[in-house]
Image (cartoon, rainbow, N blue to C red; front, side, top):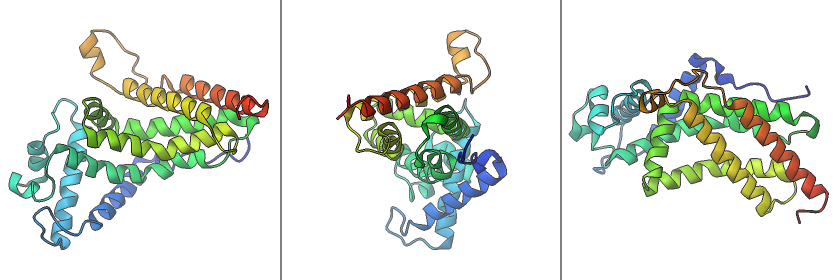
Length: 250
């Protein structure tokens, strides 16, 4: 295989957690005032970091415990009045948690798509991308499930976040399909269908509630859909490039 991008450095959880902690600190440093209009000093930023860390822990580590502001406040060791100085509702807090998590996506999987994938090695490149994308969201499966649940319930802010956070990746995949040429509706539509399916396959594979809900035994391998996702992506990229080369896409 040629100069394929190296696997995500976040394979080591300790390294990833350090990067995520830095992203959380950076996100908190960008906030200058709380909701009461008070300027945040060091103590205020540390409190905001505690809230985000407690929220992320509650989301990811306790699948049977509902994500509520009260639960976050208890984990952070704060009263509700203190928490409401920083976040007005559940969606606002969840969006604040998503910000530093998505800031780590560049190194986690976006970098896999920035260089044009050679035709001769498409299978290897699509596999690397799908594996990196799956690893990122499997690590944050609780956050993924909660975000999608709220978006599917027509929470407008969460719907917009899901759309906006996906756009950069969609743009890169569309460019892969167009072979670097100016993409058109065929590539955009294909990328939309594929990424919807790939994301939902991660959601399905990491949803530990399904055996309880359905009474059926599920394969415990959370990567079980990766090979199929990578193969579908490979075929789609090949097909779009071939159609453009043959003049079937203007």
